[in-house]
Image 1 (cartoon, one colour):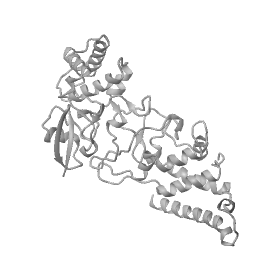
Image 2 (cartoon, chains in turn yellow, orange):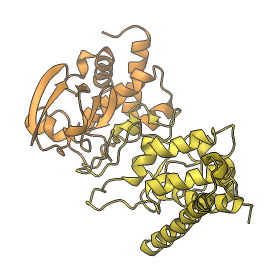
Image 3 (cartoon, one colour):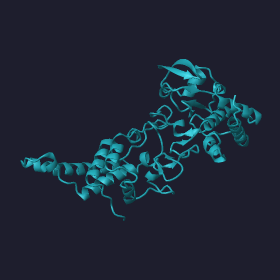
Image 4 (cartoon, chains in turn purple, blue):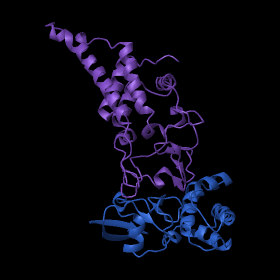
Length: 211
Length: 159
């Protein structure tokens, strides 16, 4: 896990540094052009690289466990079915008597090991990132789902969602399990995740082709 | 240690406890309201269920610091509610209880269900009550009592 995170970090730094160099170069050569004119259009290749960074976070257990295609959420790093017979319910918040809020409060409960954030709930089925057998969808499949304008308001909606949505923010501060151990974090920091999302959106939200 | 002001069954209570103390222990140890039971301590059995702002809540995993100003209703206060009264009456009529240990949580779960679903189906009951475990196996009578309470409430028979 550590080496994987290091590799992703290095890749991310190279990506951001490259984008920064290409943006700053015209100014450095003394051209008096506006900010808009100096901006070099993001390339499809850079966008695809940024997307892979985004994908690495979306498919992390802290994120994808609530983007199921089934009638239940998952939990733990192994994404096992949520205990206690928890079901999705009509509003993606469980059912009366067994809502998400039956246990999940507005913040992490580290003394009891229950994670929490404002309005804890499952992502709707339209945002599923797994198949009905709990297999994670491929990078092209999730990319196509995210860029489906009938489901998302790309680019503003998605970028804002990644920036401020409490449940997204929770994934980067997931608290501690009942045994006191810190929950595993996604492979990027939140700032890096937002930057990658922005880079992908500015490149026109390109999606990789099917393998 | 911190001091918290709680509204429990309509009454103001004040406790001074560690912020991480589960609500269950505040109720039982500090407020001496022992109707709410400790079962598993990990939200797996439902014996500790109370209502927090109307939501059935596992008090064994909710630190008191996260309750805020939301009103709490426990089994001791549920009879003040017409739905709670109907459920308790139905429980008695159906002779649901065997050992009784889980029944506080069962009743709190059933009231939460009936408050949002007036005529629950078998599926509604199974999904909503599926997290409330009864080692005596009184599930058949629990289902019967929930349906009986539903019928009474829908016929205008609530107290």
